[in-house]
Length: 396
Image (cartoon, rainbow, N blue to C red; front, side, top):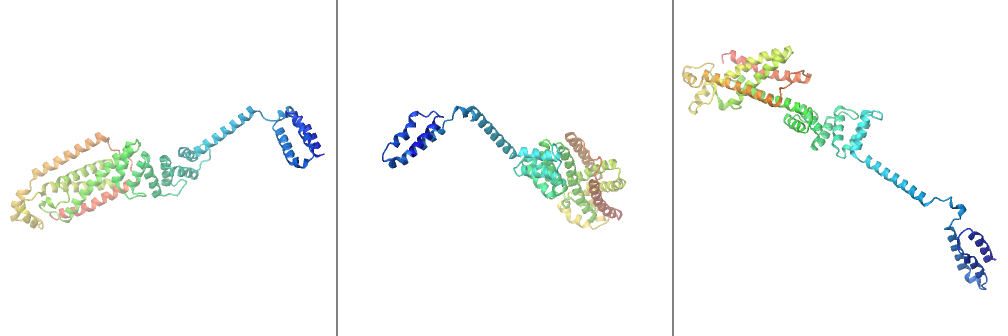
């Protein structure tokens, strides 16, 4: 009964497929075996194999329900293309240039809501991947306090990292921080070097910053030289000075005094500030006095006269015994020639400087910070000027 049932079922199901007809007789043949218990399990396995073989074939009536090979291949291709696109999107999300552009879109509000915080976040992600433009933008955000706390130290950090990669804008901005002492120690020499690097890299502002700071650095240097000599003259203005006692070589001091004089004359003509103009009016005669005294009274002293010159230092006028020294070392014509020569040299150097770099535009509109610096510089000079004037009026 078991094998007859299997035979009937198999016959009915196998009629729908292309299985060879001799398989239909296998259960009947097996049913004729007397000791069927022995072959029952193998026969069952054979029947299961027959049914599984049938499942590999589909009747023509159901053939249309399954996708064709072409349709399957097309679907696979679409899935692969979608997978490739997703991989490309993932690569873009990891690309610092793309991340930087996302930050710019957020900062500008281009296609998205304007959001400085989001822009700073995007730029920080790209900056940490060593993207110079993002590092520069992030530094600007810290410098201006946009989307992040105002932090000049952090701004200087990111400017420096970008500057080391040759980013001209960061070199220029880091130079400005060094020039002002903002977030970093004040250092004009480092600032000037950074400005020069940025100018070579094509930054539009760096070239003018180089010119401006070169003028300012030169002024600071010459003012320091003049101040050193002014301090010496304010403490003690000798009748005959020994050049070996000067803080700098005589020619260097003469040049510095004349340079500052011309600089003050130029500023006096350009300024509209009454206080500054009055200050320059007061300083120019003092500088002229220093120039004349240095050119006339300071000389290279012979070894045999050093003791006598040192003794003369405590006198307000020439005693009889010192007239011989006065005749030897004081020469008005020679002093005039020295002063004239240094004036000509300063003028030549300034003309040559303007030929190379163009005329300085520093005398245009001034910021409050620049005016404060000018007031402070002039105040220091005026203080020394008062001491020199006292000595001059007392007979020196």
